[in-house]
Length: 235
Image 1 (tube, rainbow, N blue to C red):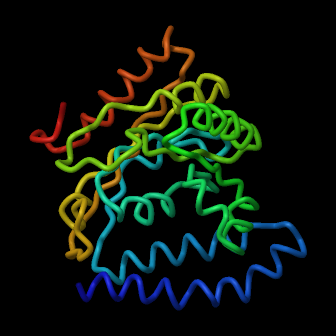
Image 2: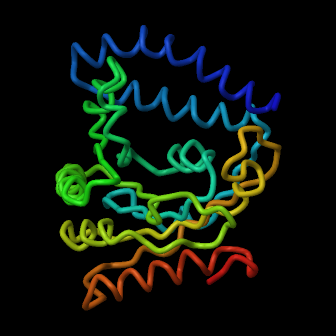
Image 3: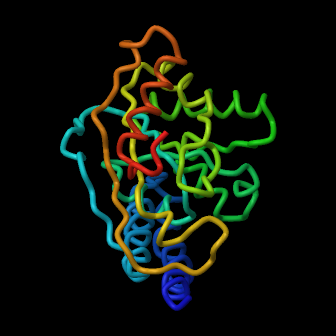
């Protein structure tokens, strides 16, 4: 419990400081990058304060000049602050529609090109994919937890189809990412966390044009993500 309090307490202190120091600059200049860098630093530092070490594999395979759609498994609430700061350059994500209605936060999220999504509305999901397409075409990566929900047992859930429409529409490579270990440091349904190591495996980028159908691309990405999991969690 102490680890969780340290992490959340640090974020609670950092948030107003970042808002007071960075947000005026963002509003005046329209440049979100200083706020983004502070946010990513804060995420990394909070995770470190919680006693979580991050091991990274395969990041050197990525071309810094290209834009990617990162597709990852999802087993813990700690996954986003572990993964997002390790994405090279700047990435966008899909976030709950309700968060965009929060004063200041919603404004910052829009300026950061985050994509609102209502998970319970199919038409809204299609709209989110279209909005994400525009973000990727700006040269901003998109990072998606492709199962849509966290897994209870660490095994892969069925994948959502939207991210694969996005990759093929934008003609950008997909980077499968396997997160391993976060299920142990903070299981789904548990508030407290324990120290440990989380491994991020960035697999070889996959070109959507190499697959005739979205279903074939989905099967390939699923197999690659699964290959990085411990044997007992592979499907």
